[in-house]
Image 1: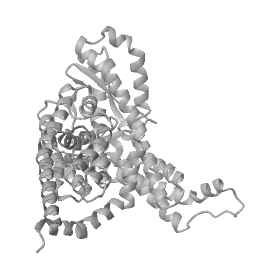
Image 2: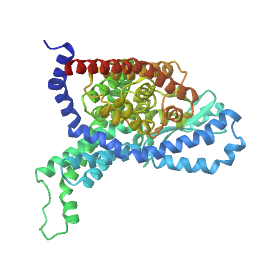
Image 3: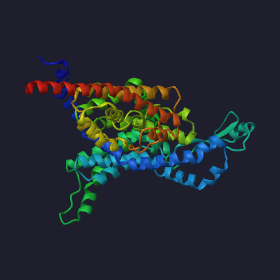
Amino acid sequence: MASPMKGFMDWMETRFMPIATRIGNQRHLVAIRDGFISIMPVTMVGSIAVLLNVFFRDLPNMWWGEGNAFTEACAQLIAVNGLVWNGSLAILGLCFTFALGYCLSRSYEVNAVAGGVIALSAVVCTMNLAPAFSYVLPDVAADAVPALQAAGLAVTEVDGAVSLAVTGGGMISTELTSATGLFTCLIFGMLATMVYVKLTLKKITIKLPDGVPPAVSNAFTAIIPGCVAIYVCAIVTQVCVSLTGEYPNALISELIQKPLLGMSQSFFAVILTNFLMQLFWFFGIHGSNVMAPVTEGIYTPALLENLQVWNTTHDVSQMPYIWTRGSFDAYTMMGGSGITLGLLIAVFLFSRREDSRTIAKLSAPMGVFNINEPVVFGMPIVLNPLYLIPWLLVPVVATVVALLFTASGLIPPVFIQVPWIMPVGLYAFFATGGNVLAGLVALLNLAISFAIWTPFVILANREQATEAAADGKFDQ
């Protein structure tokens, strides 16, 4: 009679895994994942600029007050970091739009560069180029408000500060081009790219003679599909403005982006995301890649939104999201998925199995930098029922611990993107803007993972002894 575990494994392999594999290979989701990965250099350099200014400006101002000598001495470096931010995180949505159009077009084997350019142009068509904002009037007293209003100026007074409502013609707000506009860039970038792709595949294009150079021919081939794609997005935008008085970005932000990001912050959503990543990995499917549309498409915008708030307010209490893309790496993937760094420590201390100790010795140098494929496939963990429980349990417990610390306000949310190979503790320290307690929470999770992995390492010793005894009895 088959054991319940074998029945479960068979069901997962025959029913669940094929569906998961199809989802993981779905070209639109893959394009979203690859688009976010493609803009990693831009995201990283912007995060580095923000992190440097944390140490050059924000922390010194908090310790020694505004205008301290250290900050003044670093003024030029702070200004350079500001320029880097302008050229990276401030236009992150536009960079992602091009990357998405490029990756999606490439998957359909049409001109990928044209797809990226068309997607970028179409998204800009959806933007309000006359943004309204408030400008605080310095040295204007509150009693001057009636006179200014009588002169026809739209001024208001709040807590003694007089503000003038301004409409900036011919301007693009960074709210549209940065992380806050990512969902609009994703939706309209994909819409424009798919219109371009479908028309190109149906040969609704300008055809030139064979002797024309390929670069010229490809450019002309994209003209008709590109024009239609851009006009489609422009028409949709005008319909939105005419019917609601709002541009698409405002509607998408209120109706789609905020609800999705809000749901992603629940304990259940965060734990489920981590659990599914682990489950896919157990069956040999790259869980991070399968779940990338969620982790990159929802939790990355949350991280970038937190970063935007920090850059504006320098106040972690104002950050809207407690769990972001970097939170997974900071608190639940030390040594790689499953916090296998804790497993390696347990193996070194308690394992009597030569095969496990050999794999641990080979894997440890890479495990320090969060690379754990040698452990996952060499120990092995994949399809190994002995390690199923800790493999699924460790990240869930670590997630709960980190969420409790973050939700209680003891540590700030992760808001700076850090290279994923950063060792345990240091990742959380830098990703939270230099918070020491965050680094200690990561080390606490490592200790918890060690405590959970240890009984199963000892159980593996007993399993080997039982197998050896059985083999000896058989030989007799």
